[in-house]
Image 1 (tube, helix red, strand yellow):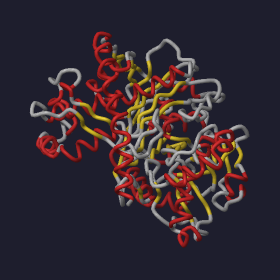
Image 2 (cartoon, one colour):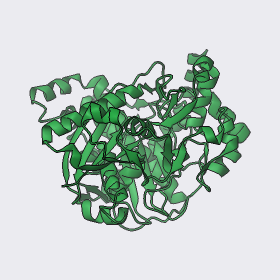
Image 3 (cartoon, one colour):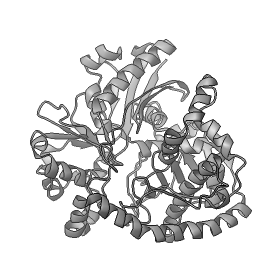
Image 4 (cartoon, helix red, strand yellow):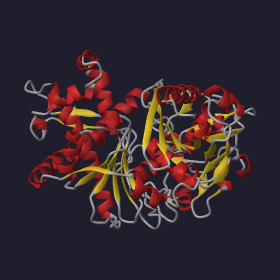
Length: 510
């Protein structure tokens, strides 16, 4: 038997998926790690926690399945783009990573927009925002010069975990585009952009194809984990690229709706769609792109609510022996709350917002609370607020006349696992949403490892053979009409509060 291992460095945990050559999932394993929030709108992680999580997860996977590591033919990593690991001469991290959701580099972003916005947009097909690597590193240069002096190399999150497995200094062209240093047309490092952080193109990691096999497992990692030194290591790609693949979106016109840490609506296209409200990336299918819109705090909004106000439901989950999650109990409380949460609105701007406002100073809010509202109302308001934010994203897709096909959108991410939340999203968007049995990026990475090493001829064949649609949620169009009226009020609240949030920012900074 041959196996393929997908490794995803997620926003809160590392997850491994082991796949057979027939596309059957044998097992999964994961380990959580901490995200640090030193200040408002800051987010950092320790890259060593990813390595520890990988080692522990793999050991547990082998222990629980009895799989012979010598039969694992290849592994492939994935992670969110933008998150860079700054390395010294010995390729050791010089500080915790600035996570892609971090908003500290607003000043650097604004300077880039003013002085180089057109140049960057024309080269990268994307416009400067605080989530991109370029302004993040400029912040370190400005605020931590002694630390930055030690920085000699840069890798991105999935590349760092792969470097520890197979020490080759490289990245793929999808992650490289997410750095804001790469020329999107030529897939080469742009000298002018690299110079903005004092680097030359030759200082940057080699750019390879996501499907390239770059080597095998190094002796150190083989000893730590039990992996075979003959296991091939694939370059890998971003988590969204591999989630889109895992959801089965491999043909032009297919659309995905992602409800993960962030939310995204993407369309598979045969070309890039450079627009300042879109994020453009190549796909793992040769010749295709997946441009899309994005909202910063999607499933993370519900997690924030659960962590802040769901202690009672967490205790109920413990008493159930884990048979029901905290979210299951929270959902039960919201199940009988009517559409519109009886006038309670939530805006999910916990980390500012991208589409369509491009405003890092927006903040989350509950508006319309009364003595009538209980916890269930607040849960439903969170679900509906995130869905309204994704409706904002969908409007941008439609306004740009992107070529969307007629088949149901593919739902992916943890939020799409919830039938209740997926149903609300269908009604708000007015779209059917198909849900695959498995669609996370570690599954996509495992499939891609199989593609890269010849078990499948290409991603399309892998998707057709491995992906199974579990159900298709249909919208209630009467509910959709009612939600359209609520969305008008949602937009009015955002417009009214936006200047107030800017005043609050000035107070906090002053």
